[in-house]
Image (cartoon, rainbow over all chains, first blue to last red; front, side, top):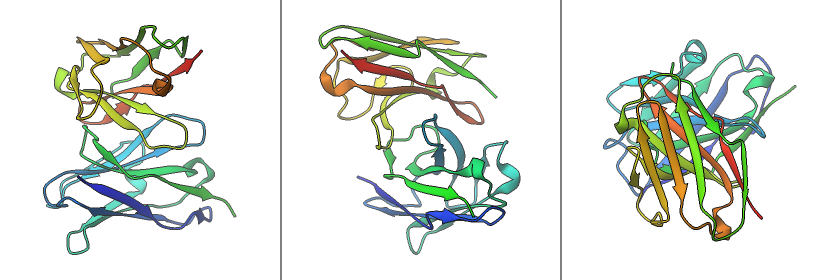
Length: 115
Length: 107
């Protein structure tokens, strides 16, 4: 069964780019869609994007202008970049397997946007 | 974008009681793309139900889902102490959206 692990800086300065990577093990990254979500402290879940190794992507319309995603099949990793970060982007970020049926999740990583 | 609302906001029940959680969509949702998740503090969400009524692997049969169109229900037949947490409904219709969640407190 798939195991996912998020990694990246826990602190990002305002106006800089938030960058995260999700490493997948126990499953083939080319066989499934992969997603990013976030959850501000004490609040609900927000979908960011999902992607397929072929290049197919789908982004949350409210974040589309700032989001870039990629997949590195050789490393079994997929990544998220969120530009022009503000305090409103402070959240626990999760990666997950799937596009709408998310059956495996990473443990989450807290990213704080602050100077 | 389809907006999901959930009720009640909080549900306080005793072990052994039945829990009924509601999810209402702003427009019709395909049955294929309606799911429920459980989230406990400091943990990632866990998939419970997909396709309205299909239990994910390893999910006890006390969890069941039903509904169609714009109204969906998650039922927990006999609450266990480990069932506390926040429950989210989620849909996919081009974009993925979640409801605001129902918190289940165990008395």
